[in-house]
Length: 293
Image 1 (cartoon, one colour):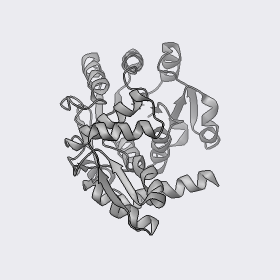
Image 2 (cartoon, one colour; image 1 turned 180 degrees about the vertical axis):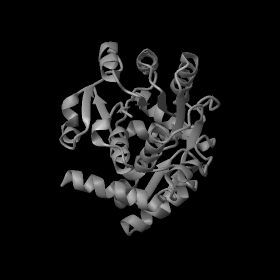
Image 3 (tube, one colour; image 1 turned 135 degrees about the vertical axis):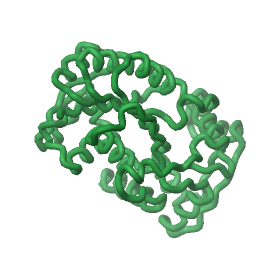
Image 4 (cartoon, helix red, strand yellow; image 1 turned 90 degrees about the vertical axis):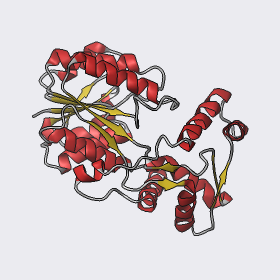
């Protein structure tokens, strides 16, 4: 069985390739793709097949999918402008006779109407269903790594600031989510399923502050702001007005509970508990330090 992973030069896609091989896939049966194939040279050195695949260039997609059985479509990275690229991959998968398409969607994509990131994912889920391609939807909750920067800053300031109130987040590490995707790609079945992939336990920003206290060795507190107040703080820190409003709006949606629903699905599929908040953040900080060294 040949498995193709899109966006394999990114954090999640690369981890999926690692997880596939760790779970028994032969490197030569994995096709890692990216817009810039040179970024995959280290994977090629391990025996992984590599190919150019650009969501906006259908010719590259068709060529990469030739002879492929299963595809992981890692969602594009630019909100608001990624559905057409996703459609190109889905259309090519249908034409190539792919037997399983796995798509990385967003939490509660079709029902989270006040979540700015949901629209693209809901539209993609709809076009996948309409295409008839055998598919599995994995809706990834927030990456724990998203908050490593908060912890690093808190080492200096002693404060973590967000506009999510006391809401919870059922986040998971990229590595755990990648392993879940690898299981779905490798194992028989799963077609037709929509999986909410989360950590085992939802945590609050007060819990994040406690984790930062443990990791930094200094007391860290959480300061909750309103959405508008948080947007103003982000602008003052240098973010453009539109970006600041978008980020603060996401925090507001989190405050309304869009990421709070912890499910056992991911842990069941990977066969172990998901990584804890403290351990996930520690690993992310260690990776950042190693990259900077």
